[in-house]
Image (tube, rainbow, N blue to C red; front, top):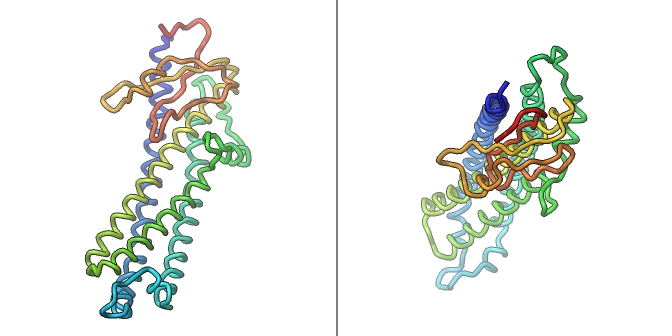
Length: 265
């Protein structure tokens, strides 16, 4: 069997499953964000005119004027509750999806001669997907809540800016929709990057279980391939090493087994 066939087979299997799994998560994530956005905008719209009306007329309004209003703090409490719900939903969604990603990649890379269809214990998989791998020491869970905190700050800043500038409710709504769109993109980038990492984790574990000693970086060269990934193509790592993939957010690279007796060149 030629390496070219083996590499394409394993890489194609990983890519197809990751695309499928990411698409399923994105569908649910989009639903969660849409629901939260509608709820938050509805609450903002119901309160916005009250805030405008209570700012002292004939005076240049300041943030301090808003901080004195019970209406403002009631809105902040409603916002916190909505974003807390969003964060909890994301964490539960990602946890399920990452386990499915790990298990599906592991099973897909079983050799044709392997009739046992061995799989990993759930607690083992859950422990592995919780491993911190980024240089900044942040977990995917902490990134969810960081993104949620950023969104809360952006929504609050937008509200204050709009009140102080006397913008219309429609203008406020457009700005809030933009803020939610940016936050969704951050959440989506997190999903895609973590899926890439878990794909590599799972493949590495499967190859290690088969006694493979080394893996090689596989880059599917197309119009979307970036210079960062291209320069790593063909790099080899011992199976016990910490894999550097993903090389960047939304990375599509994967690892393939290096099998003795087959040359990659």
